Amino acid sequence: MIRVLDQENTILARYVAQLRDEVTQRDPMRFRRNLERTGEVMAYEISKTLNYRQQTVVTPLGEAEMMLPADEVVIASILRAGVPMHNGFLNMFDDASNAFVSAFRKYSKDGTMKIVLEQVTTPSLEGKVLIVVDPMLATGASIELAYYALVEKGGVPAHTHLAAVISSADGIEYVKKHLPMEHVTLWTAAVDEEMTVKSYIVPGIGDPGDLAYGKKL
Image (tube, rainbow, N blue to C red; front, side, top):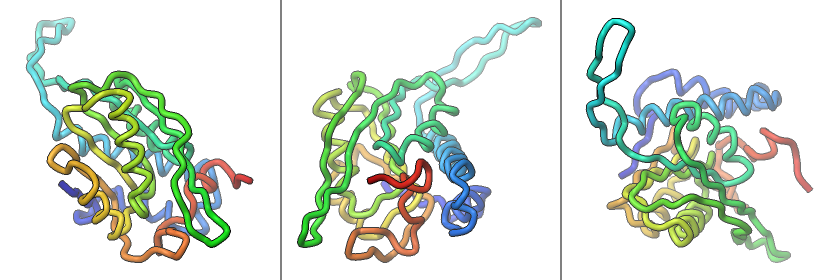
């Protein structure tokens, strides 16, 4: 299933607009906070899809019957750009377990690019709800590698949610072809149609890792 959140008018549009804006994004602290706030909104939307069970909560004056989440959630992010969004999800799912994937783009002299996966850290995923966070879904290769690396190490989750701020149309099609979509939901704030030859989304945002944490060598 594909869920595109800008199909409805919500406050999320303001956060994404500021992430895109070439002037506003020059403030790294604000850029990180907008990624975090986007994660919070997405976490709220995903929370509507979870399983719930009734629980009794004891108040100073009596008891209240409430429907509370029953699923165990694991939040996974692709370093380093995914960290601010990860924090946003963790603000909402504050009892979630956490996983991290270290991956980067490696360019060859001929201009071709491949994704290199360095490290995966995860708890058990068996029967849990996995949320994989990466701000940009460009080619789709990173999220595919991350998903299968997490499953190989942690086991098969009951359901997986992929969360991206901006997705390319090609990236969405790639995900639909290469991931088990009967058990996967892709959430994105917006879809952009174009990519550069170096697989950067247009109009996109730019490099969220550099904007959040500074340029790398």
